[in-house]
Amino acid sequence: MSTQKVLFLYISISSGHQKAAEAMISAMRGLDSETEGLGMDLFTHAYPMLGRVFAKAYLKMLEHAPQIWDYLYDNPDVEEATREAREILNILNARKIQRLLRQHRPKALVCTQASPASLIAAEKRKGRLDLPLIGVITDYGVHSYWLYEQMDLYLVATEDVKREIVSRGIPESRVRVTGIPIDPRFAERHNPAEERRRLRLDLRRPTALIMGGSQGLGPLPELVAALRDHPTSPQLIVVCGRNRKAYRELYKEYGQDPDVRLIGWAKNVPRLMDAADVLISKPGGLTTSEALAKGLPMIIFRPIPGQEERNADYLLKNGVAERAGDLSELDPIMEKIFSRPEQLKRMSEKARSLGRPRAAWDAARYILGVVRRAHPSPVRSSRPAPWVVAR
Image 1 (cartoon, rainbow, N blue to C red):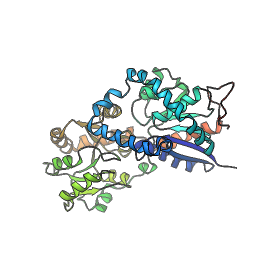
Image 2: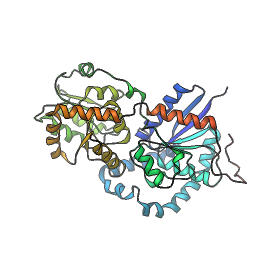
Image 3: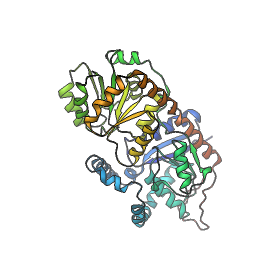
Image 4: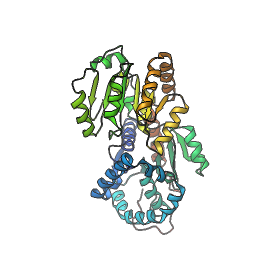
């Protein structure tokens, strides 16, 4: 029996969207050896130079002008105003999609980001593509750029997100709640004392894990400086991700500090979370889901407007996080958390109850179900274009 392929599409590498795709690919590999998953940054694949420029510009905007993203995010006026431009872009991309699909001949397409979902939905709407299309939403909310009648299946984080999608006109039968797919290693449990011992940390002192996502966004040096001399005397594990500038600055100041563990790109985040009492971070969808799976309470620091604001709302509503708008608000929050161990324990138990560490497997099962049924797209053309992909 020949191997079947499923393409997982996103437009930003080293991101939560890519990590979600990789988690599902790993789970799918364990469930069905006859089906191969392949992840792809669609924008960089189509435009190698422009893709990298776009990614850098996006990160700079989030860092220096988040109010612009706040305006663009889920704004129906912007969605309507840009519709024609997006249609032109879809036309320009159509033949690149044709070549990609002819090369790989997948049985289904899975999008973990809205932009490739828009592109594929447009091809289906025009009758030029007859493949199942699955959207995996990696946040605790949904925006307008995700919603297309050509989407065969949505996999979402919570029942609230499902209700929101259905309220916007998507049939309930096309929406399934799986949680946000995360690395299967977050389902494992490690002894906190052993993990602290491995990091050469005191087993009895409070320990905070500071992260800025895969890109190391946020004022990491300022956060460390604010917490280093805090009255609760926390030990700090600091993950800088791809932010080499922040790592160099922190190493110069704290490289020999026995109470600070500096890490660049971390491959062992599940074990770092097991060593910590609290996570201080932006509430990205994957980071949030990973923390919940580990039962790790969060201190949310300066969420990015849009999707991270919605993630923050979800965490605060469920009592598993505190929010600090600036550095001055960290002091009382840290004091509150570490001076009340019973409250910290309740937050941890609540987080674990919300966590879905096996979300990747659940999502993979739904995807494999679609592949095995291989049902036709809701949109067909009586006279398909020459580059229709046969299944």
